[in-house]
Image 1 (tube, helix red, strand yellow):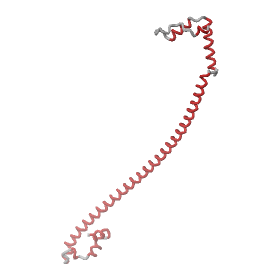
Image 2 (cartoon, rainbow, N blue to C red):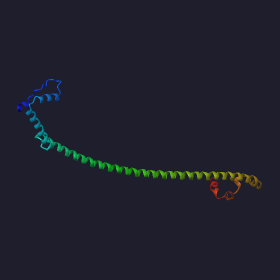
Image 3 (spheres, helix red, strand yellow):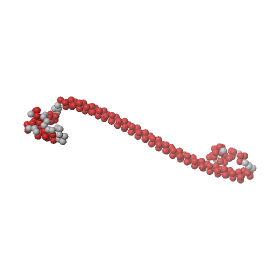
Image 4 (tube, rainbow, N blue to C red):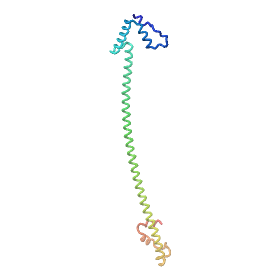
Length: 182
């Protein structure tokens, strides 16, 4: 019986025959005892593998697989550690970025406030300057009227002959610096 089990009675040269058709043809040619023996061998092999009784070739493969699995586990743990470190670095970088952003926003706010204050100061100074110009124009107009109506009849024909201290006292404190510069 053993010899016949390995004997091929199908037609392997026939290219139209599929493995299933070939196996069916082979199985049909076996006697009932041979079929039963083949089924028992198949069941025993399945049970041995199911109960962890691998054959000799499988044990070395299992050892290799076990070693590869350990390597994968250690690599996975290393990657998890690196991932945690990367997440910590990311959080730290985000925190630093938030601090820098808040600092920049604060500095920008201070700059805007200073610019607005400077703008207000410039507007106020321009307004004061315009007021002083009008005051000087008015003072000059009145000076001309004074010279024309009072000084010329009194004998002061030129402005420069009029005493400077008298002009300063007439001009008032606001215009003294401007008169000295002219």
